[in-house]
Length: 363
Image 1: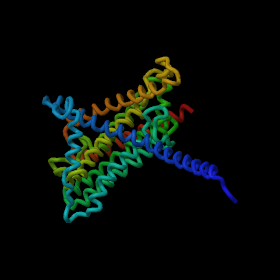
Image 2 (image 1 turned 180 degrees about the horizontal axis):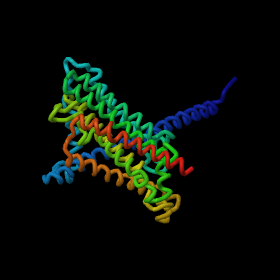
Image 3 (image 1 turned 90 degrees about the vertical axis):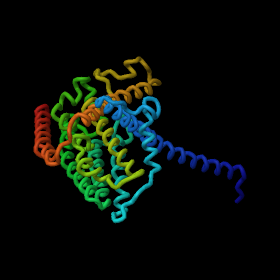
Image 4 (image 1 turned 90 degrees about the horizontal axis):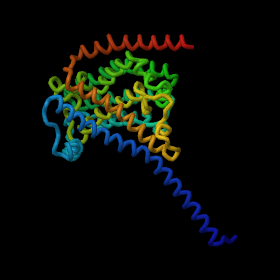
């Protein structure tokens, strides 16, 4: 059987085309992930710059001003410096746990961004259990901190790791109960559905007005989860030198630094999604393309406006968190645990009971 040369060339070109399609498919699969990572990186740099500027304003001093315009490149300069510093390992510590700890802390927080919607279809994974996946993934981060504290073979580091684990367990339960109340109100655990449920009633439909007690509990619990003042007991400088990151240097120390701001950003985004209406405007039944009288070709503009809206709400909460850090004194460890178990947990349970009762009565 003789096959013509043209037929062989046609078969080869077909297989080449199919392989190119597979390569393009793989590349396009990574494009949204890389775009999100780039956006998160820029967001963290902006948060660091904002914190330094706001703290300088509160303390009546000059903030960063030399690295770039208005000192906006100072965080980038600090990160570059940490990247090139020597990476030291404790001689008698567990080097495997010491090295794995920072990676677990960062990766577990990064995975949480996959369920955050920046628009109606601008989300990596629109899951039916979106908010509870965030809680489940974020609860892994304290394991990384505990590993770091134990692997450092340092009493201050170990105490900081134990404090981080105790604090996370204490405040995750009220946080979860508040999220459960929101899910009951929205009849869904999907982050997109929760935003859409709030948009039906406009500004008055925000869960901030329907769940004021839950919002306050969520606010306090998220600050404690982010280990921000007045809840930064795991890394209290006056007591534990630097807590679980005492023995760290170089890029591993930088990973802990990035993880704290990543956690703060993801908590702020969830406040905007769960309580402040997400990417929607305050007017009910008004969508951005209709508002500006633009057709389907202009939906990109509407998506960009939605991103700006959710980021504005996010950075409003970030401003509150940063101001709180430079205003309130640090709590004692017993006060922190008492607040979580004796006050916030009963209040969150009562709020969930009230929400469930109202939902049953409305049926």
